[in-house]
Amino acid sequence: MSWKAMTPAEACDLMDFWAGLSWPLTRDEAQRLAVERLGWTTEVDGGKSYLMNTVSGFTVPDVSTIGARRHLNYVSLHLSDEIAAPSAQESAEMGDAFALIVREGTTRWGAPEHRDAAGTSSAIWSTADGARISISLSDAGIRGMFETPQGVAIERRLGR
Image (cartoon, rainbow, N blue to C red; front, side, top):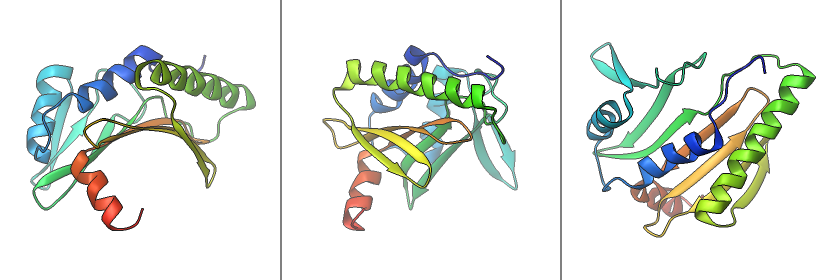
């Protein structure tokens, strides 16, 4: 394989980490926990800290932590390298890696909802406390998103 991806267990363990935290948390609290428990780092730019997954060694290590007002709404991260123009073989390998992560997620969290939109395929699970876990495959790579219960509630109020 010419690109890197997390193993299915590693990808799902990360989603379980985020799902297992006591929500609500602020962006800073969530970043601190990721640094302490996952070994990730933060970088500061313009006085604002950004979370970086430097452990996996991906081409793009940044992790999006988006909050509204006080509490964190979601965490979005790469589960594979990001590839600008994948070959047919790399696209097939990404599809296989995505399928294996979804299979592991199904074992852990039950049957997902499937969505296909704008060239992205997603498997989505809702948790008992109102959070949501998504694993997505696009032409560029595989991403994971954990939406906090607070973030999901906002999305529902907005009709999404």
